[in-house]
Length: 119
Image 1 (cartoon, rainbow, N blue to C red):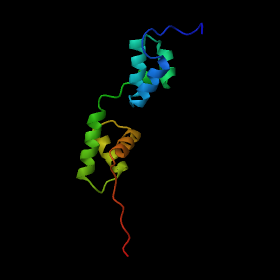
Image 2 (image 1 turned 120 degrees about the horizontal axis):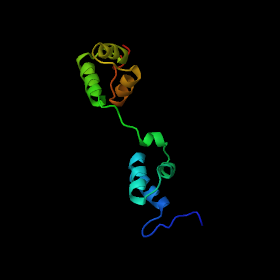
Image 3 (image 1 turned 90 degrees about the horizontal axis):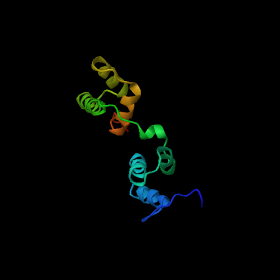
Image 4 (image 1 turned 180 degrees about the horizontal axis):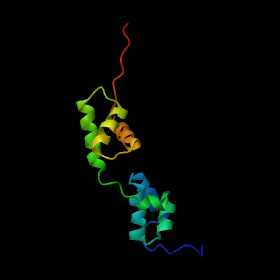
């Protein structure tokens, strides 16, 4: 009991983490809440929530939305093109990674319709 910090008024830290998980708040938001409101260290907050410290500092690339819109536009214009062909078209204009395009492709639910066998 000597290593526990006094909580003061309100819920315990474990209860707060449980409540944040029940509310389905993102883990990074929960860790930032623990740091700012409860005054916990970065390492302690990340361990309580279950994320790495590098994930707390992650910032998505700024052109992600532009790339997402471009993938959707090209897929709607060229319905017979797959993910690889769309990536080739995008590389003419932008510097893109095939794995990023594939992730966006899956997230947006894009894809070719399967041909039904003639019976």
